[in-house]
Length: 87
Image (cartoon, rainbow, N blue to C red):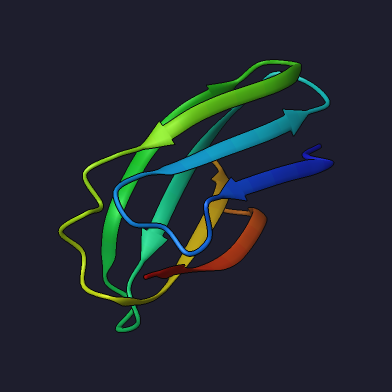
């Protein structure tokens, strides 16, 4: 379903860019958690077949640390998960 995801930059400072390659159109939820498993960013995104790019902004106020970033489908299945650092 999602053969390739690029999260950049890592570590991030003011924004994060997601490049997601998708095999078919799919509605997903992007979630970002802090070290206490508190959601700090969340949004829905309709992925089209091919390359999809979005920017996660307003993260400059987050404290320095490690964050989890998940892409889940509407059924709650995790399609992609990674850790990113705020520098």
